[in-house]
Length: 74
Image 1: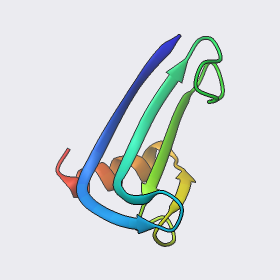
Image 2: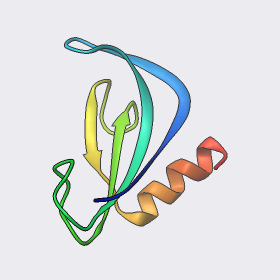
Image 3: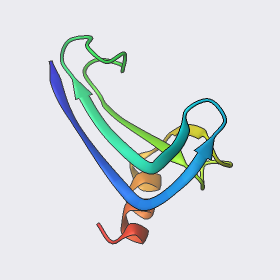
């Protein structure tokens, strides 16, 4: 059980395994193990271009996530 929200930039990138993917940040908070995220804390994950290249996934700090979301207009 928990809550999850994703924000997309509107940009896409090509991943060799998964094809075309959206650049996005996902905020996740779980109180029970459901989606594989750590339980009892806010988890911020980025998938896309600025994390080091196409197909890269990164765990973000709140400050990093806020800066990216601000740049996307959220």
